[in-house]
Image (cartoon, rainbow, N blue to C red; front, side, top):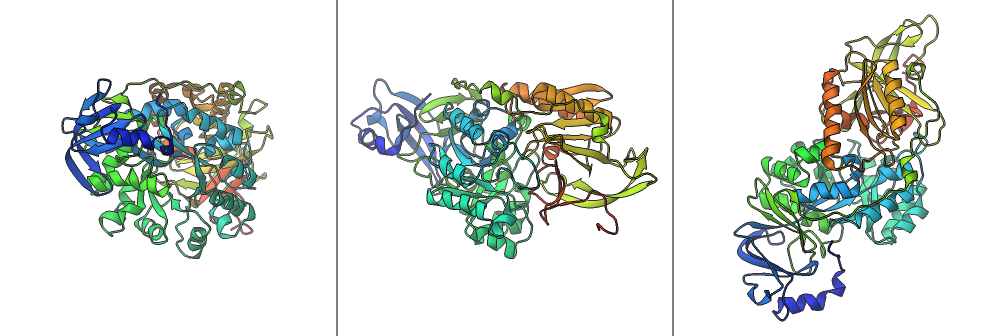
Length: 602
C-alpha cells in the first residue's frame, strides 16, 4: 500500500520530476484533463506522478519517462480527480472500514470525510480510535470528524458512552482528524449550551472544521443562531430553500443522496433553477447500506444522478471533488488533478455515464474495470468489541405489550408516521383499540408496535410506541442493534411474541438485524463489531441485507428501503417524533411526551 507523505517532505522530488531531471514513477499519457479549477477539459494531457503525489500535468511528459516508469496509455479517456464523500458514516454501510474501502475504491471514491458517531455512542473514544487506526490500513484518504453529540440528545436517550470537550480536544491532536462531527443538538447550540460550545471552541482552536446538522425546517432565528455558533456545513436540508439559506449564510450545503434519504433531486434545483453558486454545494451519501453501494454505487451514483437532474458534468464533478476538499481546508492534498496533490486519479470513458475504468490512489493502481486490483490490509478488532449487547435476561411477549387501566376499551396515542424517502417523521394521533388490557392495533390499520430496549448498561429500560407507514401484515417483527444514534435494541412488529423472538436472536448474535415471521427467523445479518458492523465482504453483507428486504416485502412492507428508515426511528434529533429507551421524544420541543393523549396531555 502506498505511503501518503506530506507535501513538505516531497517538494524537491516533485520539482526534479517536473523539470525532467528525474524519472517519474507513473505517467498517464494522452488523456483529457478535467481541470476542476479552470472548468476546462484539456486535450492530449500527460500526468506524471512521483511517489504518492502529482509532479506534472501538461502536454508532454516524455522527458520524465525512464526505464522504471510505469506508463498508462489514457487513450483519450478523461483524467478526473478521485471522488470525495463530504459526509458519511461507515457504520451505516454495515461494513468495516477496510471492507468499505474495498467496495468503493473500484467505484472511484478515493476519499471520505467520516463521522464515526455510531461506534462512539457504543464504545466511546476508544471506538473512534479503532476506526482512525483501521482507516490508515487502506489506500483511501479518510479524514475523521470527532463525534460531537455522544449522546445526541442528553437526557432523552441512553448511550453506551459520553464524549465532551476534553475528549474532543484530545482527539483533535490525532493524525487524520479533520474536525468536529455533525453537531446534531441544534437546539443546544442555539440556546448556548456550555458543553456543546466548549466542544466547538476546542475544534476551532485546533483549526478544525465544525460539521453541521440543522434538521429543523425553521429558517428564522433558531437557524441564524445555529449558524452563528460555528457549524460550517449542513446535510440535513430537504428543500431548495434549505440550500439557498445555508449558502447565503456562508455555509456549504451538502446535498445528500443516501439509501433512504433521497434529497438530491429536490435540492439540486437550487443550482439548476435558482442559480445558487455551485461551488458552495457539496455531494454526500451520509447513510448508504451495503446493498445500495454494491448494486447502485457510491459517489459515482450520486454524481450520475446530479448530471441526470441537469447539472453540467464539470459542475457535478466539482461538487464531488474540489468543493469538498476546499471546504475542509485540504485542497492542497485532494480534490483535484494538479501538481503537489495526492495522485488520486480516475480514468473515465464517458463523463455523463461516469464509467470508471481505472482508479489510482496515492500513485498506485488500485482498481480496473470496477474490480479491486490491490490488497486491502486486514485489521483486527479486540474481542471486547464483540460483546457490546448487554441485555442480561431473556425477553418475553409482556416486554412488548403496552398496558392500560382496567375497563378502558380504546386509547388515543401519539404515533410516529414515516415519510417516504426522507429522514423526518410526522407526529400524528390515532385511536387504538384495547384487548385484554393492552393496546392492540387493528390488523390492516398499518400501525405497528415499536420498542427500544436499553442495551449498553443492562438497565432493563424499555420505551414503547407505535409507528405508521411500514404496511406490515401477519405476525412479523424486525429487531436491530443498529439504530441511530445510541444504538439501543430497536424492535418493530405486529405481534409481541414475534418481537420477543427477534430481539432475543439479536442478543444471541452479539448484535445484528433479525426478521421473524410466524415464529421463524426468516432473515438475519450478524453485526458483531459493536453491534454495528460486519467483518465480512460487501457481497456477503449485501446478500444478507437483501434477504431482510425481501422478507419485509413478504411481510407486506410497502416502505421504500424500509430497514434504513426503520433504523432512524430512535434518533431524537430529527423532527418530529421519535422513540428512545426513555420514551417518546417530541423533537421540536426537545422533550419526552406521554404516549397517550387525553385532556391533560393534548
